[in-house]
Length: 299
Image 1 (cartoon, rainbow, N blue to C red):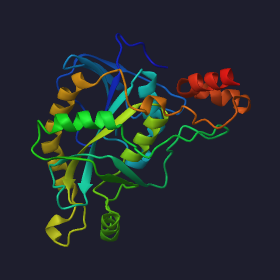
Image 2 (tube, one colour; image 1 turned 45 degrees about the vertical axis):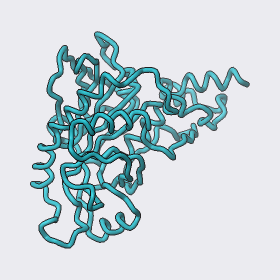
Image 3 (tube, one colour; image 1 turned 120 degrees about the vertical axis):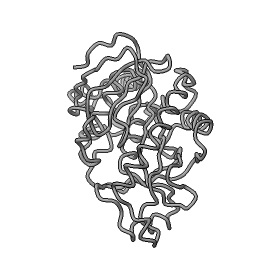
């Protein structure tokens, strides 16, 4: 059950490793959300930031309880949807696969590759088939806003690039890291693919602010080996800039969306409405009811 909000909120923020809270929140309340897919990572922290109401979710829990493979991605995104969220900004720590993406740089990726094996990446199945367009996995409009804001705050920010999402929790082997470089991937992380895909299925605009912490392990020099200490130290340095970027971009985000994200399910549901199991339809009503009702009217 979702508690009633004291005021509307349309922007969500997912904070990853090194960012379990955001400074500057006022009028804060915690919202507990239960979903048909189980519990989200934590309660949603709703408050006002730079004059804008936002909902913040610590991706791994505020005490960093959950591994990337243990996250309930469906519950996290469904929870945002149930709060009325139309835009999600994801803050994520990544390793660099290219020389010009240096530690402490920021990247606004525009492409994704999935190398995970154990995760639920779709709300659909069990008697309802839907195929969303996903050639452009991040919202271009929201990504552009993030880039425009980031370049006024940090010295080095890169627009575009391919992020490969791996299973984890271990970092890559050198062979894997070199393979991803041969694929022309730019950065590597452990959480983004599922969030982006589920957000698209939920017709939510999703963009990522990727904080580079290291050079992964593709460099031969032993001094470039990935260590937790290096990652955490650079996370702390990057987190301050990430918070400034988020705070400044919020007033620029408009509820009037000109991108294709809010229409992602238009024509995507292949199952005849009469054939959809009533229990599944009820379970997914928040996501599909408008689309299914429209299909029935057209028949």
